Image: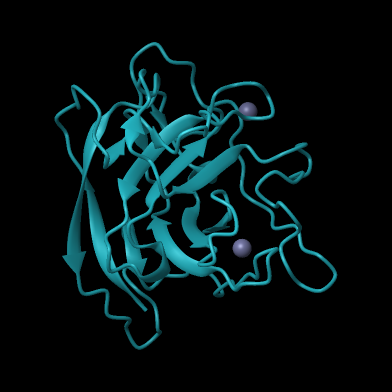
Length: 226
Ligand SMILES: [Zn+2]
Ligand SMILES: [Zn+2]
C-alpha cells in the first residue's frame, strides 16, 4: 500500500500559478496541449498536484484531472476478450459517446504553467497532509479526498489490467458528492448538485487507477461507484 496524503482545499483564491491547486494554471509537459472533449469544449481542470516522492511508481509525477463541463456521466470500462482495458482506452469510445469526456494525465516533465488559468473552476490552493490510512477490519481506507493509502470501495473492489498488460494501481480518491466551486456566470453543468459548482462523473465516488509502467501519460482509469 502506498503512503496516504489527505488533500485539503483552501478558501483563499490563488492569484497565480501553483503546482498543487483546484482549478488554476495547469502544469503540462512540453508539447502536451490543454485536453479537449470530443464535443470541442476545452476540458475543465478540476485539480492538479505534484505526487510526493514516496508514492512508489508515481512519486515525482504531476497528476492532473480534467473533465468536460457539458458532459457529465459515469465511466463504463471497455474490455478486450482477454480481460484488459481496450487499447488506448483513454481515447476509446465510451458509448454512447465517441470518446471519453474526461482526461487524467500523469506528467513527468511539467515545468511550466499555461499562460491562462482554468476559466470556470475557481483557482484554490490544494494542501497535502500525510495521514495514517489504516484499513479497518473491512480492509477499506478512509473515505476522503486523498492520494495513496487504500481505497474505501463503496461497492465491490474493482481491478483492471492496462492495455499494456500491467495491473493498474489505485492512486487517488475523490469522495462522492465533492463539489468544485466555479466562477459566477459560467454555464451550469448538467446533473451537478449546485448551480455554482461542478462535479466529476455525476458526483460518484472516484477512484483513479493508474498504470505504474507509465505506458502513456493518459493511462489512468477512473472507477466510479456509489
Ligand atoms: Zn464534452
Ligand atoms: Zn499501461
